[in-house]
Length: 291
Image (cartoon, rainbow, N blue to C red; front, top):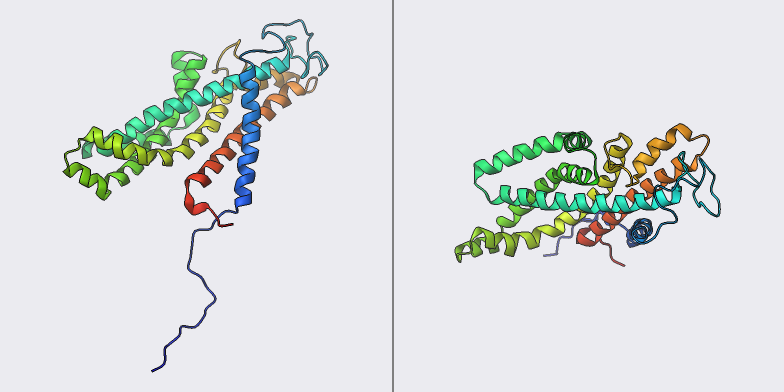
């Protein structure tokens, strides 16, 4: 009896497409350079700026020069100083809002995963409503209620982004709770808090790194939008969004006042998103390629 051979169809088993290692490296490098350069500028502004924020001795709408590297605005303030302070504000809002989104979102997500069925259903419905609600509109309502300030912007953007984190946390935590080792832990007498801190959190947080990193860029863009509408942080906190709003009436006379804040804002958001993309490739082994 001869062995039966299957015809070679030239096909291979379907696998998840991998991304070239070179592309992943480029994303990480470009994202790190863009994000890191602007972050360094913001950190330097804590110790030094060329001028004080309220120094109006530079003359109105002056072009870039040796004294004023980016020129001056319509009030005679140094634009480079404002750009540096804007970078610091973007870092503050980004990290602050992501921290709030993580604390509130992870807390609600874990509660929905381990609570009774009716609590889970109620929280899930509320989270679905919050996700469907426009993020910027929710942030505007919170800022209008509390008043325009850095703290209000951070709280508003953080709470607006916490719904997505809570939804993802609930999904990931539910999967972990269905694992055999969690069942064994319950059988051995481990309580709910013990299971959450020993098993659920340690297996859930890698899933949340990328969404939180992506929310950083979104938070910076949301703060700029609020400031452009007059609902962001007031002076002396120079916001790139407010700089764009103030420069739109003089864009033909002093274009650098409108171009530079927009360039930095876009570069910072792109850098944060590219870093998040690189983190996703590192955290998810199915996207890695050999060689």
